[in-house]
Length: 201
Image: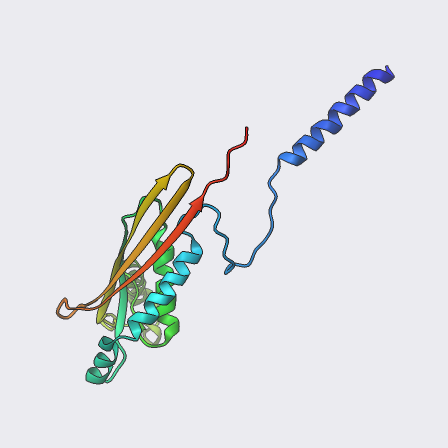
């Protein structure tokens, strides 16, 4: 009888140890800390590219020319950013990073996106019926954008055995909504060399 109890205890303890070894090992890191695990596009690429490109865009002649001619800062909206790369890239995160960089610069007025505007317009309609007159937001008072920022993300992948070079190219264009003029074209390139470790069996 004692022998079977010992066997049972051994099985239970061994199972517990194996279950503990199989679980994930999680550690918290800072949101702005760089960790390149796969070599693919990540949150750090999105943040750094957006910050650098927006900084460059606002330092170019179109900005000072607009401000001097109109005696106000320009209103900008972010349009479509197309992912033409080989991998899945969450372009909404990249657009969010660009919007944050534009707004936080304090150098432009920022206009809500098409989807956001539709939701806000529905709220205004609701206010017309239900809100007190002195608290309603009137229709027809929206700020029109002067420029739209559009872009693409492309990749070129070169592979040889366990080594790989991933090349990312981000192209952004600032377009005047008044006359379709392209007032700024920016480009940012990222190149990553990835060497896979030897597979162990």
